[in-house]
Image 1 (cartoon, rainbow, N blue to C red):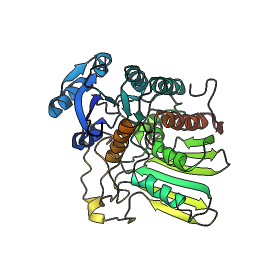
Image 2 (image 1 turned 120 degrees about the vertical axis):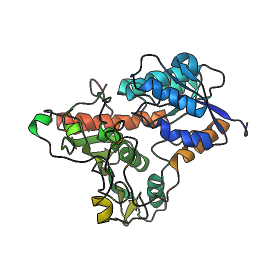
Image 3 (image 1 turned 180 degrees about the vertical axis):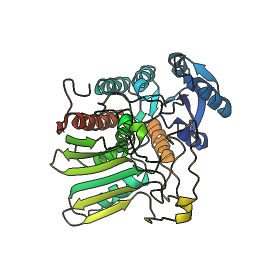
Image 4 (image 1 turned 45 degrees about the vertical axis):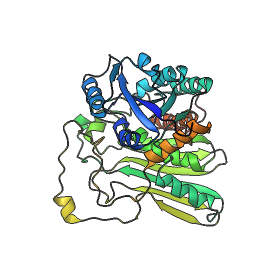
Length: 380
């Protein structure tokens, strides 16, 4: 078993996913082999040629029809990179077929979908992993500081995670949609909702350090980008989280504009304990660099196929010295498949994680704290 190579099926290269970012790690890992790219026929027009191009580049077949593709004998793991709205259906389908799951960031668009995925996975006894959250150096450093005991008992946290992408511009009243879009609408042709997209990392860090979250208070709607204002969707937001022990964590997340930070945007955690405080910089070495010529003379042209810089990444002056999180997650998955162990972040963790984010959006819309677990019509 120790030398078994696991076949991975890549389901979709949606621009709302990180599928293409996973490919280098899949290709380089000695225990992983990409066996195909798959999608359904009823997909966005841009997506089918993109999927085919990736299949050609990887030298694997493009399979139209996800249900048949996941049942193929050579498929051991299904890597789901579709839109959020389609992930739950694909995850349930793969789990019922006995295939293990590698899922990009979210398992569903609402709590009903998330619960259904957990039931399907745990009922099928397959292994699941969401690689994006807990394998990075930012989380590992924070956990090491807490576990070392030097802070005493952890009492509170603050987290700032911001991406230096996009060019903030004045927003006229004609460009601004009144109100704030409630949860449930995630797919847009031109934007991503940033409290969901970026805030997800901060929420995951808090969940790794705190007891289960029981109350969420969110604030949003202060727009810096006309693209987001036009939808009434968030490009920045804050959350206050209270755990079962009464500890409080605050966080800010979103995009703060190109060239605003030397390492592409701050990743900072402030840990407050009974014996001391700690500051973790996820973009270590912790150097803020502002070089006038690099900012004034920088090339700010934007790829027409990526107008909001979803995949191009922010410009950086520094290189992170942290470990490559995708490889660490793949090692964890392979170990779990070999031994039956549980990966660090599964669909059950993802269900609880999405519940916090949905509660944050509900709180912004209702302008009041929201208690967990969500029930009734809240973010159903």
